[in-house]
Image 1: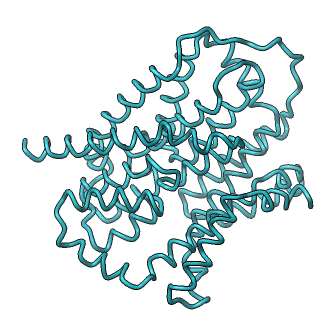
Image 2: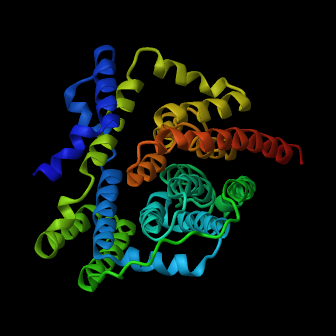
Image 3: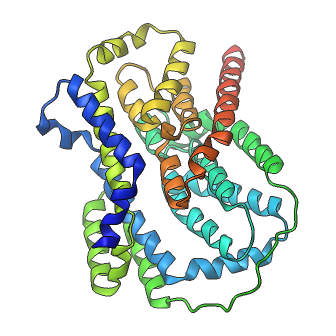
Length: 371
């Protein structure tokens, strides 16, 4: 039980979200019965399932096996960083940004055991990569799913709409990766005796992973989560005890805080004026609001007042860069890293990327509109 509850006591970000919620509750009119509806339970169920399944694969020991092979294949830091960043971006286009992180980040963490790589910086760039890569497709992230559903575009029509921005941002991100990771030979640690890995736990986790992804597509996520939990209770109970359950509580607190924020007097009235804003004002508003409440809630809040246009789609995806709350994927990646310094180091790269994306997005939009 100590293992289960210890993260809640040391989670400063969770404590901050709870305090913020209490302050907002003082000024925002609401009923307690409205709070459960403020939480996106589908997102919570999805995140919970992925946390459990990834932990199962991690505890099987297979990430260490894979990490050894990666270190043996790549000789230079820059080549490895470019491969991981490009791989994270590619995975995020069809597996969604959070799923891509649950695959790439645990693998990256195992590299620390075999080499002196700057693992924290790699994870930061992987978080930036999934934000850039996932914006390309209508299934890459939750905000795109929402926008696609409110538009008249086909699947490939949406991709064509997002392609100019996605291409430009990936070129910039890969260039930034090139400059931030030196072409030094990877310094490997003295080889350790290879530890055995649990094939039974690995295959159980992979099978459940495929089942869970299929269930998500068929909208049976809740039932699939019950199956996943029951399977681990029967066959690998230690997996459930090692989950970062406080992360799920952080997400619940964030959803409630956003709900209370939207109930503040004057906020809703201000949103109704969005229909009369210029393109530039809408662009900056969507990016700015994403920095404060994350791009998915920002999309939900603004969608009734703004058309699901190309500019709006670009803006909320650009809003995933910058400050930590810009994208929930940022929080997932940094939490998995389990390192204090990474929280401020993230902004050294994410804020410049936000500025680059903001300027590039607007210039490309003006160019396309003038053509």
